[in-house]
Amino acid sequence: MLIMAVLATTGSAASAETYIGVAVGTAPSISNDSVPNQNDGRSGRLFVGQGFGLRYGTLAIEGEANRFGLLLKGDPYNSTMLGVAAKYSFPLSDGFSIFGRLGFERTWLSSNAPSNAFEGSGNGWLFGLGAEYRIIPLVSVFVDYERQSATISAPNAGAGDNFEFGQAAGMFSLGVTFHL
Image (cartoon, rainbow, N blue to C red; front, side):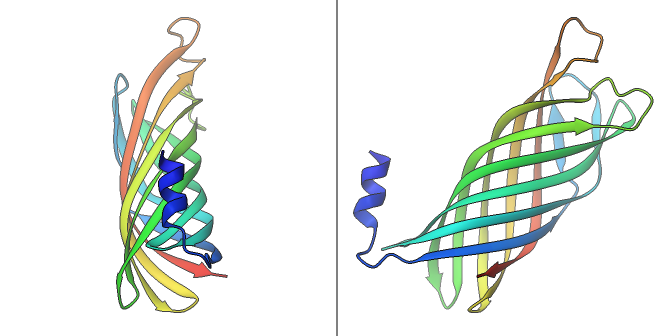
């Protein structure tokens, strides 16, 4: 049904556009269901996408890499996420647009701390909302909020065969997009 709705809104002369970008975000608000934690610094994101013009907006497939630091039980960890998402942008006026993003992600937790019990990885989802302003035809700036959630499997946690815990992180970002 969704595919039929997208095809129905596609213009006869749909255009395609490739883009790349970078964003710097706030320290993420982190929550998980069983390990005491806190954020540790800013977040960063790199992304690449391919957009297709529709009658009302643009639909894009976007890949991203995101990284931030956190403390789990006082030990420093890095959270690295790779994701793929569908992004829909709706133009408002004069270069302004709003967008939403929904997709899947894979998260890895790593640490150089002596106690690296929570190192592991897991799959999850991501969503985001934001606004973008196209400064010139090839460059735009945006602000957005992105929320990521994954179930991390940590085999070294010593709590049985495989300790699993949920990790969710939300962050606001400011970024720039280069339209190729």
